[in-house]
Length: 306
Image 1 (cartoon, rainbow, N blue to C red):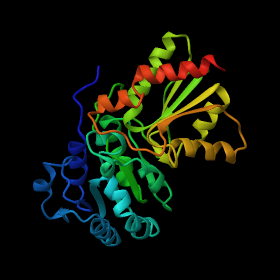
Image 2: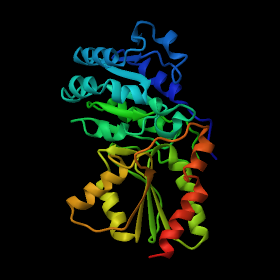
Image 3: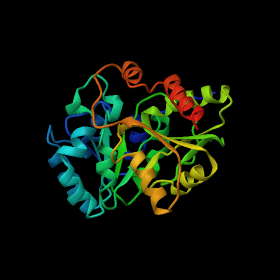
């Protein structure tokens, strides 16, 4: 039985209020931290709708020994301010923490301009940048102390979804969380689609398909050993993500397999060079064929043809 959930805002407040090195910043986006500004006083900065300035200010604070925690919409934080993230935070290897709001399908009713579907590809291309994509708010809270204590810049896909599992309390940088073992299929996923992957795994088990489920959590550094283990031990790898096919998990898995000169059967479930039609999350999942039952059905179709 899960206890009272600790929200991201409460977990962040506990950490930053106890250590004056932390400064929280935003570009007029306080959805995840509504109560925190009043409590932080001068250690809270809102630069307005100016993401490039936001990252530049954060880098300057980091050079002065602070740990800035930046909040903005993921699409603008990773694209509009990309050069600043790359040059000011990444190349300088500063401990700037970038919290991207409403990434991927969590953008829901917003149109293409607000859909961050290439954020992982962009952020993992930056030298020194770490990329943390928690499965839900509990996963985010568990990883927060590790993220904030890292000396490196880190991009975090903010995820307020309720947990459908009890996560491992141990969250280490670059280590995946293996929820279930299986030797037929491995579902590799991260972020908001973890709940659908968990449901799909249970449905596949009921059909006699032994399914391994891996919550990668970190896409940089990624748990390469776990991905290689899955490639060796299961017949099919499924990469599941609310991201463009190019540059995300599917590309990452391909890079790893090629680097180790391994062959594997891979089923990618992602968006291919198109945005999704704006709608509430449940409707987006249904339309894109990425609900738990739909994922299970697509995997079964591939398994029957193998």
